[in-house]
Length: 350
Ligand code: HEC
Ligand code: HEC
Image 1: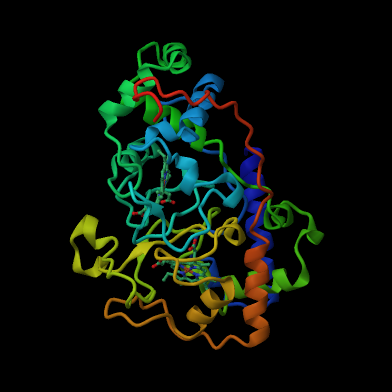
Image 2: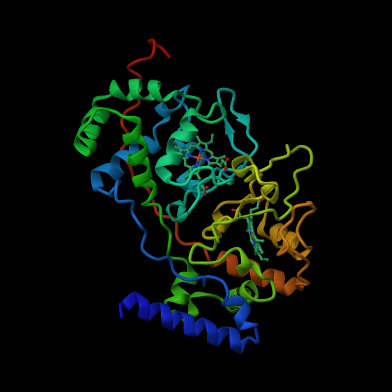
């Protein structure tokens, strides 16, 4: 038996013991993939991680020349100092920095996602990366023009040659950015330390919150597995009335009526770093989120049957929030050497 299997079965038994001790209907919680430390990441065979590729991906991630007006980089909306999100309810993008319809999700641990975007329209990070560059409401640039701009910068030409043995290609841009994103993994939260045996890593309140999460509050039905997501889509009835536009979510991808208003279950790791919450940034704080669930979610014809009133007391609401706070790992400092911003292909004085 491998070490990891032993660890897993120890954790499984401990969890079962906890649940039984707390009088939680163990069979209910154990029907879902257990929450616990993140497993090692699976790296796609056609895009192995190398130090030079990650470094190139990091440069591209922070480079505003990937946008139409050379002002927006990926880090504008997925900013390392704002939990790799932007702190706004809905993103600002496009040539006039107009407000979009959706909230910028964090890219922390996005390498563990089975689907990217709130509606899951991209499967892999490689597939995702070229989307925002071309989106007229985000970076509004053409791929041809990005390739043209980067081809005029010797540092990039050399780096692409070293990493891919080619000139600048869109495929290379996507692969390098994805490789960098796969390094943004946070797995050192108090919860992780607790699950690895440090009993004191979580407060008593947070521990009570964990049992509520798996029991009475039923959060585990959707926020399960090591990344606290089932990688599925649900309509929980997040309000979309004015000033919000109706957003059909997953339906836009599948055209199935049952997917109307359904969004991807987001990870809850590092959740305290990424307020406001939900696909449209409707709730400013975790307190409002938990009160929303406690009251039976929102109104929608298509609402998931797993969303209903919870009868949590004020103290229980607080314990749940304390548990979610314990899912935040320390933000890792990202250091990078930016390629100096010269714009070789732009008119003088731009
Ligand atoms: C103008 C703001 C903005 C910029 C710039 C931007 N993004 Fe995003 N990003 C968003 C928003 C908003 C979403 C969610 C969109 C949706 O679900 O339809 C998103 C989603 C994502 C996701 C999916 C995360 C998840 O959990 O589903 C990844 C990964 C990502 N962006 C990476 C990038 C990369 C890489 C770049 C640069 C090439 C970039 N973004 C540029 C706003 C932005
Ligand atoms: C039926 C599945 C389901 C259940 C049960 C559920 N959630 Fe969610 N959760 C979701 C989905 C789907 C979203 C995103 C919805 C949206 O944006 O429209 C979400 C969003 C959230 C968010 C916002 C995350 C972010 O990054 O914006 C938090 C926090 C959250 N849930 C906590 C909880 C807690 C706490 C419980 C238990 C009281 C719970 N959830 C129960 C499916 C579920």
